[in-house]
Image 1 (cartoon, rainbow, N blue to C red):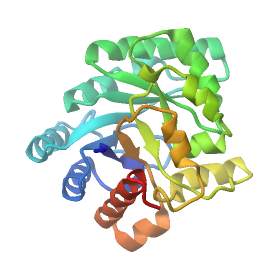
Image 2: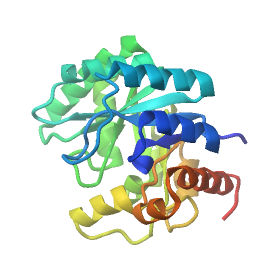
Image 3: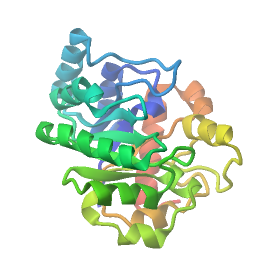
Length: 269
């Protein structure tokens, strides 16, 4: 089977969007997944939304290489941020030809979170974008069924569920629950491996998620069982690993990531 892969920005966060497109083209990815908003206070952001020169150069490289933008991130909805605050972000995604937007809910008020997620879906729909809700162990939207309840409540045709294999495992989600969810909710997956034993603190979980992920097949997660519960979709390789990145550099790291994913999905160890 032929699989499609996207190079997730968190894996090569030191690389500009232009560099990412070049790396993806050289190493065999069909897509890139671009981070366009700040997730942490000290994180470098590439201002595709405001920087017209960067946008023009990135679009030219996409056209020249045939690499496409699969998804953009991150629309993080917390008590202070409204969906309308992301309109220019969504419009930049459309300009880049993106398919999807990653969203997270960091809001303890469930009614407000659901209402705002629905509004974000409505803003994205005329732009041709799905809005894919990612759950993270340490947030208010912490597991599979909590996220599924949001999608059921909003009932929007462009709403999706983003399963990250690390967060699925760390949240102790049920494979049986995953099998029962509507197939049309799944537009892509964040694929990575990690040690079977999870960190025991919030700080440890966050550090492992941002800095210590493994290539598929090199850790202890039940990846095959998780993936078997979903349709075959593009796999965004979100595999940040600070030690390997320092040793290999972005291009070689990205090459090894996709080769490992291909071997694993084709039945290798």
